[in-house]
Image 1 (cartoon, helix red, strand yellow):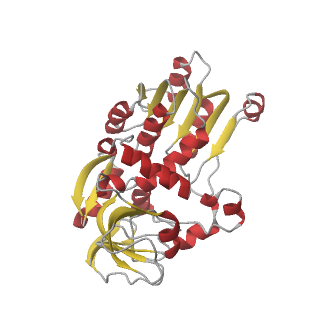
Image 2 (cartoon, helix red, strand yellow):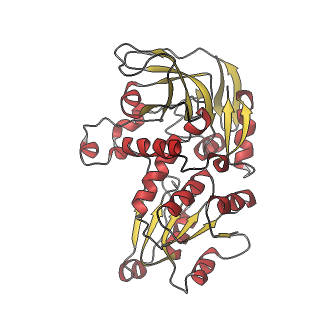
Image 3 (cartoon, helix red, strand yellow):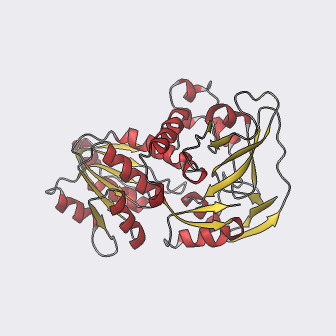
Amino acid sequence: MNAAMFYDVGDVRYIETDVPEIGPGELLIKIDTALTCGTDVKTYKRGHPLLLQNAPSLFGHEYAGTIAEVGKGVEGFEEGLRVVATNSAPCGTCFFCKRGRPNLCPQLKSTLVNGAFAEYIRVPEAVVRWNTHRIPDSLSFRDAALTEPLACVVHGIEEAEIRLGDTVVVIGAGPIGQMMIMLAKKSGASTIVASDLAELRREMALKSGADRVIDPSNEDPVAAVKELTDGYGADVVIEAVGLPKTWEQAVEMTRNAGTTVLFGGAASGTTFEVDTGRFHYGQLTIKGVFHLTPRHVEQALNLLIAGDIDPDILISHEMPLSEVKEALEMMGRGESMKIAIKP
């Protein structure tokens, strides 16, 4: 099969390699559409200690396609079915799974699915069991491939606990931020503010439902939010960038007794500072939110089927598999939203 292979930072090659072999309980999916992701861009630029522990390696993890082969013992799936699957799955029995936090299950690391930028992908048994779903004919492969990132956003919005009439700020208007805006609006937010350096993303944020956009290179985002809220700050602030600086900025934008959701993953080992007086006497709620659960995957797919998310805002270009490297560079420069990769 043809595939995009990661060899080193900045070194992605279009090569021919073996079609993956599957074992009991597994599926082989012929990919119709894979999507680029911010994590893919970070991986391309600096590697990834978890997703790409060994190089050369296949990569890419947002995809949808048709079942090409069914492993022994698999029930409920057959060759030819249109499906979407996520990039990991919990065990269902560990400490965190039993406490309703399967997104923190240690098994996630051993079930990682990588290799969507290829013609075929192997889906491990746990992912088949927990996080693989049929796609109705009414939903395109391209749109269905949004299921995994949208499931993460569904989790983030759930934790944000947005109330009717709330003012919500989203820092970072990439595809994740755009989906945050869409779901925040559907959750009852009356005013949504989006902050991003890229002009394209600010324009898309307005189409997604933002009432006001901020260019941090031209104005102080914290001051702008305070001015919009009579000096109080926003009820809910969602950080979708993953930098200590914007984590701190998010807390500063949040009103007393408000909620800050730190959704963007900052590099391990970095730290951020919070004023203890403000945190305590302001009764702030600061939440870290990571990944998804099987319940969120089902909810995300249902949102896509119902047409409650606009994929045309989230996916701006389509490119062939041979041009994955160019697609990642383009997305990294802020010149696109997600790019649909067609094998």
